Each structure stands twice: as structure tokens, then as C-alpha cells.
Length: 68
Image (tube, rainbow, N blue to C red; front, side):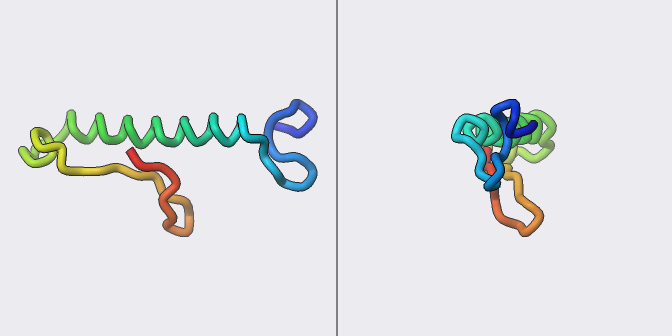
């Protein structure tokens, strides 16, 4: 993505709100899918029936960027 196409960072490194929203929704969707797959493949009754778990994506410094 380039600034010339209207997507991605501009010359100052800022990203438009639409791009942020799209990426954010995609990351949250990935975390949700992780939870669905965890529940489907769980052998533990706690995970499968009580759904006592959570899934998240983290950046390289360990900060959570999306939870599902």
C-alpha cells in the first residue's frame, strides 16, 4: 500500500482512519477464529463446555493488539 493510492501511511507516517478500522477488524476476526478453533479441538471439558478460555494476538513487545 502506498500513500499515492490513498492507502497506508502518508509522508508523516500517519494512517487514515478507514485503514486502521479495517486492520483492527481483521485482527479481531483472527482472534475470534482462534477461539473457535480452540473450542472445536479442545479435549478438556472446561474448554469445550464451559468455554473458560480466551485468545489474543500480541505485538513483538508483548502488548495485546486483539482479543477474541
